[in-house]
Image 1 (cartoon, helix red, strand yellow):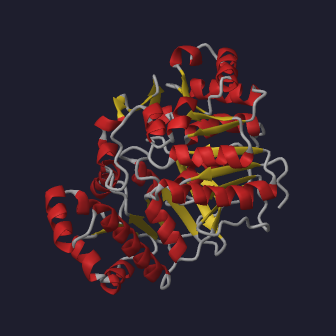
Image 2 (cartoon, helix red, strand yellow):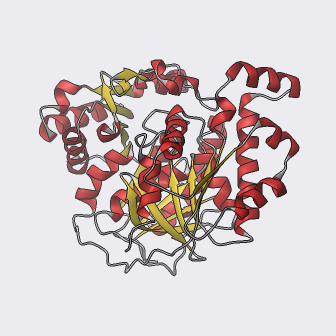
Image 3 (tube, one colour):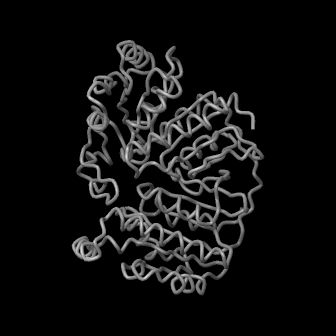
Length: 434
């Protein structure tokens, strides 16, 4: 694979790598996604955009830096990509400062522009504060995230809180009043901040136009600037980095297979998406298996997998989900106290359980795999031996369809992404004639 003119995306979880790679695919780019401890490019695949997941969102900052450094030294430097994009979470989870700083130092960037807004998904940045549908993050459900609760909405404060004292002054903001004036004023402000030693520069944005103007300013700067942001920001950059908008002719023929949905997401949005699928009359032959605490603790993989297999007719959809596990927080907290488990350990146990179930089921039948949640997606795909995915289509806004080396059709979705009808849209996609 020769990549001297090509693009790399480095994300901290699999769903982020996938939904960002999708933005370039939609511009006509051949894309490949890889993940795991030993990230590697499949050089047999035609590739213009390579996205990787370091699986570092839920680790400590030191481990996250080490994983990102490995990717920088062994992938980014080796293949000499022309453009590099750092994907970060649009609700600011993860080790953002540590990972970006590692990339700046390893790859000799002058600074990073951080623009995590994703207006089409209700994420905006105003005065450095990240808002979800107009509400500061700390007042939304992400403050209750069991693995990574967000208790601060000011991105600058979030960055500074994980930095050494001497680094704190390197954080600054390009405010909305500058952003709204367009790429020229943004570029002047950006260059001025970098000349003053600023390294992590947050940019406000409330619209797709704002993202496009920020992306244009970055591309015009004489400094070496690392863009870091959401899939929405990647979409803006794709218009500059990959201006061809030729549609790739994949001759995609969807297989007539059952759909296996595996959800380990703990978000209210995912729970509402599953509930909406249960209630709809527009999709038939759906079977739901809610995972309960006793399933996790008894590790009854055989029983649950047989229930799933029994209901996986050719047109059926089987949904195995953990949404009910978090409905009663008091009951769950008491149970975890009794079992001497932290919530973080329990969430990890859920993902491990779901991954084992996935492996058991798919070892006995073929199915289209749909995973929800970053850690769940990673562990499920790791269990079935998937290391690389080629993006082939979009099944819903910001949600890609990929195919692995075994020809298995795979959809991954972030637990925080979409509307209440997104899961219905995904299932309906596979019911159409392509």
